[in-house]
Image (cartoon, rainbow, N blue to C red; front, side):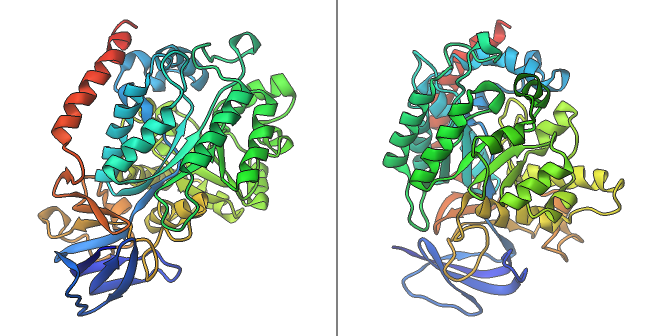
Length: 458
C-alpha cells in the first residue's frame, strides 16, 4: 500500500449525492482508496503532488466501446454516415475477420491510451471479434494491455452465432457457436473476474446483437451470467428492429425479455429505436442504457430524449462506441457531444439535461451500470480514481466560476493534467507513466500495417 497527498487542490467536484464541491483543500490517499478530504492535511509517509490551480473530478467510466476498431478508422471507403448500420456491417465485417491477437493487443492499447489521457479510469469493451485462424484469446490480450497501462478494465465477452445463410452479415471466420461462446465466457470469468472492491479486472457476458444470434445464445448467456453473478450487455435498438419484426414478429426488446436477457444486471447500447413504452419497460426492470452520441450523429439516427428516459428510472451512462463509428476514444469529447446534442434536441420539449447531469452519467451512472459502488464519485473510502484539470490557463479565464457544468459546457476536451487509478498516477504531464510510449507506438504501427493493407484494397 502506498500513500499520496494531493496538496492545495483548487477544487474537488465529488459528484456525490449532495453534489459537494470542496475548495482549497487536500486529499490523502492510501492506495486504493481515499482516506480523507480536508484542509491542511499532512502525512510524512505520503508522496506529495502539488495541485495548485487544479480541479479534481471523479474518473470517467466508459460503458460501450470496441477497442479493436481503433485500427479501422478515418477511412472514407467505409464512411459510416453514408450507410445504414446493416450496410456498414456488410462492408466492415470482412475486414474485421482479419484481426489477429497481435492487432487486438495493440489496437486495444491505442484505444486505452486515448481514454486514459482524457480522464477515463474504467474502460468497458464489448469484444465480439474472435476470429478462426487468428485467435480466440482476444479478451486476454485486452487484459494484458490494461494491466500495462494501469486502467481499470471490464471485458465484455461477446459473440455472433447466426450464419449468413440464415440472414446475418457475419463471415464464417468470425461466426461462433453458442456452446463455444459460453465455454469461453466461463473460462474468462474463472480466470479474470475479480469480485472484490477496487477490482481492476472484471468480465461481462455480452452477446453481440440479437439480429445476428440464435435465441438460445441469449437465453443461455443469461443463465450463465446469473449463475456466476456477473453482468450482461448487448446492442439494442440500433437499426435491427425491422429485421427482428420480419424474422420473429416482435421488436428486439420484447425478444430480449422473452430470452430472460433483461433486468438490473443488464444494460444495452444505443437504443435510439426504442419507444417511450419500451424505455418505461427498461425502467421497470432497472436496466440501463449506454448512450453513444457520436455514432448516432454520424449515422443521422434519432436523438434519444435523455430527460424522458431519466423519468422512467432507466440509468443512462455514456460510451464512445468503436472507432469505426467515432474515430476517437475520448470520453471528454463524448461529454461535450452529448451536451450539444441534447441542447439542440431540448428545443422541441422545452428542457434538457444539464451539463453536470451529463458528467454524472459518465461517472456515477457508469459505476451503477457496472455494479461498482466504490467508483463514480469521490469521498472517504471511495476508490482513488480521478483526473485533474489545470484551470490556470488563459483560455479558461471567465469560465471557471461554475465547475460542476464546466467540462461539457465549455468543451474541455484536451488531455488532462493527470489521471489516477486506485491511487496510482498512470498519466501525467502528457505521458503514460507505466509504459514507454515511443516503443509501443512503433510496435503498434507495425501491427496496424497488417490490416491497413486490406483497407487500402477496398
